[in-house]
Image 1 (cartoon, one colour):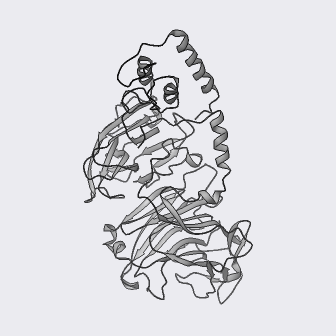
Image 2 (spheres, helix red, strand yellow):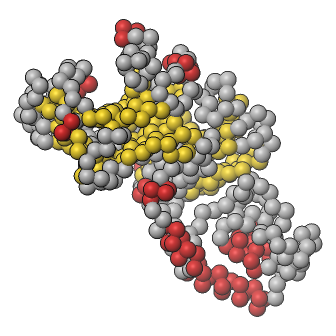
Image 3 (cartoon, one colour):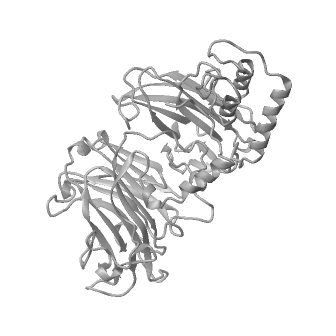
Length: 522
């Protein structure tokens, strides 16, 4: 495990080495950390690969849909699968469209689809998982809707899980996510990554790697842990249907419409949890990628640029205004063992125009779990350690740094860093959070940052790159530099050497300034 450290940008020769690695073909790097690729289609050919996909011929789709599916509406060009819907009558239906089902099926894993959605009233594009219904009648083994969209709602996509013993005993869980990206964008005018992670304990739904909805086994009465069927991938564009309510296709609808699919990738888990990521909220041009969101109903948990300490974005949280006390926020976990020392730092800011009032409180806390992905308040939850980082008395328009450290309790395997916004009385106000670090802390006994037994300029370089926590306080800052100065020239780990001569000290600072001047800003 590594000591807690500040992020830094490589410079000089290091940057050229990274450029060499960036030239590696993208297909070799498509597996997210913690997952192994089991099946994929990148759609790089000129026609649909029928060893991987079944193009559908079907005149009687369900849900009062108005399209007939035809194989010739599923084509491949420009590196994409193209599913085309138009107003050509076919098979007794007013519209014609495309649908494909994967030949491959898998139980449990991660499914990831990068797609651009059609954009007119009356379309119903969907990315979903379904077992072979000839073997398992619907929904006896479930249906996982990774993404559904209504053509008249470019800013909203939804996910759902359908389950039950039979058609008449069916139940479902569903959630929506509102677009939170560049102001000119939406889910219709650009590609986005829609994903699900499914196992016997939970289903987690993602858009652009933001986990916006989680369904646990307990929520569905143990249904997930009893499932046995593998699932196939379904991709289609329906026209009309019950999902659209009263906004069916009409004279304002524009045809033809296309859903473009850049790739479909399926993975199996190789490790239980990934390292802490995206503490600066800059991934993907500014996002909450890698964070799990809760209470995001408005939406009110966002990546915004109104107040930033570094870069272009920060985490913004405010209340749900739902009529009663409510809790909203973001969390992310790391693997731990009982007895580990963990620490997190974060900076917060409250703009005067977003002043916290009426008892709003923001906390920074650790939640501990005996199982990865455990649910808060369940038997897997072991307890919390928390500090208050903002309330209605906090000074506005000023950045504050917060540090939370703790010893991991016995039996814990996951520690989650949580930013929790408590809105008890419908009060206005919002908080911005930036530059978050979270790690297991491996204590360093002295200023010998590179472990070579000599405290010299190379150890100074460790500090300069943000790696030297020489005083064991889980922060890399000027106090560590003081420790290094005290021990400079020492060839043992226990004694303290004199402070270096001024000329030597100035030379090192000059070297530091030169390297820093060539470093890209964060």
